[in-house]
Amino acid sequence: MSEPLSPSAVAASRQVRAVIRRLRRRILQAGDTGDITLSQATALARLEGSDGRTTSDLATAEGVRHQSMTSTVGALLEHGLVERRPDPADGRRLLITLTATGQEKVDESRQARSEWLAARLQTRCTEGERQTVLAAMAVLEQLVDD
Amino acid sequence: MSEPLSPSAVAASRQVRAVIRRLRRRILQAGDTGDITLSQATALARLEGSDGRTTSDLATAEGVRHQSMTSTVGALLEHGLVERRPDPADGRRLLITLTATGQEKVDESRQARSEWLAARLQTRCTEGERQTVLAAMAVLEQLVDD
DNA sequence: CGTATGTCAGCTGTACTGACATGT
DNA sequence: CACATGTCAGTACAGCTGACATAC
Image (cartoon, rainbow over all chains, first blue to last red; front, top):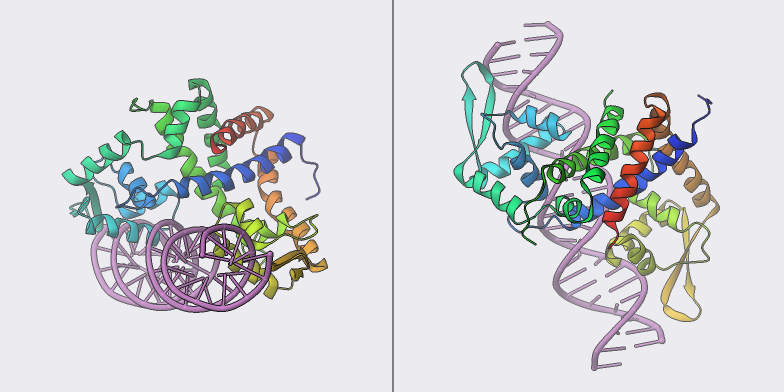
């Protein structure tokens, strides 16, 4: 319990907390694209190139509860951006796929640089810096998992 | 302007967003002292070492509307963590200061929230991984600044 | 008067927990 | 039976806008 923490652990902890607070605010602030919300757009992007993913699957990928993803997917359904069909192999599952409109939306978002962070990573970072960020995210992701 | 985004920019953007969502939830969970919320704790921390700041002042510092800060400060008042006194020089202003209990809370919250992440960075990462995280945070911090 | 400060009410976005039905 | 999937209801948090009073 009172094991000494290395300077880098303390420094990294403080830095991570400060950065995620600021990043989160900026991302949410820049997230108003008009018609669909940020969490909807994020889930939509994850469906690209998939034959069908379940709500629970998406929830795990996004790190939220499956109940939360149900409402996100529900909004996408109402917008006609995704459709559902039952999994013939497992009656509990409903497979979510992009509709043609949904696919257009994904392309549109990407083309229009609706992702504030992606645009900044592109224009204000070197490839090496982006690789560093990716590596760090892999490290942090492990820490979140139990 | 309309340059295509590199794969690493798109991948890093997605990863960062997923990781900050998970980290934030874990940090909230770990720092849950049961009484005050994260935004309250953040505002409280900003009052440390101050002779008195206004809600508008705090709102600007946190990058939120003054109406939003009013409710945050209101909660802190109800908890007895801050107190208000009118500014003798300007009748519109109410100066907010920490109470003794509020100062205790600042220290408490800071400890509770930073320990979880620091401990994990210590026990589950190598020194090299911690340096990678620190490097990535420096990169991301630049992106938040205008 | 215009501007700044502060409050109140109502809304949205996001994600949570709990309870429940159903299918494997 | 336990477990996974999905839905619905209710709650919490954090921010927003609009309307208003008050003080400079």
